[in-house]
Length: 239
Ligand SMILES: Nc1ncnc2c1ncn2[C@@H]1O[C@H](COP(=O)(O)OP(=O)(O)OP(=O)(O)O)[C@@H](O)[C@H]1O
Ligand SMILES: [Mg+2]
Image 1: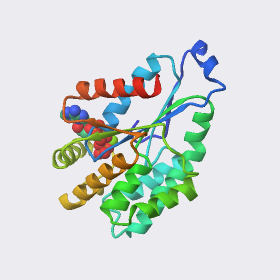
Image 2: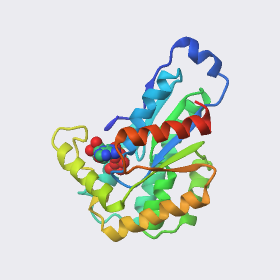
Image 3: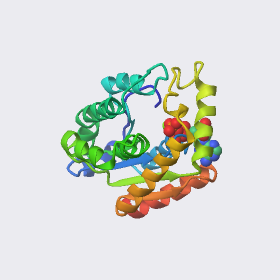
């Protein structure tokens, strides 16, 4: 789904009927660059769809036409000198639009919404990595996002150095004409110390949000990580 706004997989009509009146489920994928979020989200979407649910796959920053324009500003390494507070404000601008245009309507219609990054990323990257603090992020989330909380957050945990190197290699491979046809390297150029703070930020969120956030070891093969995620989703959400 790289480079596009939210995608929907339709479920068979019979499977949709009992879901019409029930609110859907909101599942987010979090973790450092290159931990495998996008890979694992695609794999989970296929399983959830095969189980007969309607699935929306979406991502942040982005997920709407306006949000994808904001994504370009945020991730393109030619964006120079963006103030940390401006960066955080743009993340939330894209998110507020995303919630209004995609996430809330899909949940109201009973869909399972899978989202590649959400507010935990802002808390880890801008709050911890850029040192803007968790409270600012959480307050903005309350004001701008109606404090919408995922039903489940899968936090993919890996060695920060190894995963960021993987993301950098992936970006180099896809820079010319691949799934990411434009430059999305601005964050990958950050220092090891920055990513160490982001990692600490994620660990602090997991410790605080024990009921919502499940840490999954992402150091194995994609198939091993997928198996762990399916177990977690079945156990926590019974989907
Ligand atoms: N378990 C794994 N083992 C080895 N390589 C993997 C694994 N999972 C994903 N990859 C590869 O590592 C790269 C990064 O994976 P992916 O794009 O899914 O990560 P991401 O968390 O979405 O990264 P980003 O935050 O930069 O979007 C890709 O080239 C992917 O094919
Ligand atoms: Mg990704």
